Amino acid sequence: MIPLVVGTLLALATLSFVLYPLLVERPIVGDISRVPLSDDQRANPAIDALREIEFDRETGKLSESDYAALKGEYTQRAVVVMRAGGQPVCEICGPRPERDALYCSNCGLPIVP
Image (cartoon, rainbow, N blue to C red):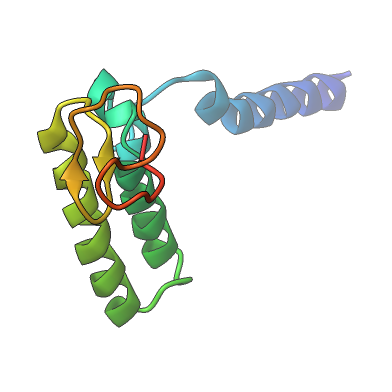
């Protein structure tokens, strides 16, 4: 009878040890995916791309030189979109005055949402 009780207690202790991290919500320091985003940041695909390349660099899928080049490019795009303040942005001409335009009225390229 004693081995059955000891075995049951060990099984419960092991189960609680394994399930504890899944049941207790703790903030992860440095995890940018859990940071609340403003509406402007949610609508900015360049910020999403920056998160993706950061993740790819951390997991070893992207070299440091490729990361630096992509980060510079997407940072510039993100700044342009943020400065536009919700206006449509052409990759060549910058922010456009037409709020509902699908194409740039200056060069004809599709506008970044």
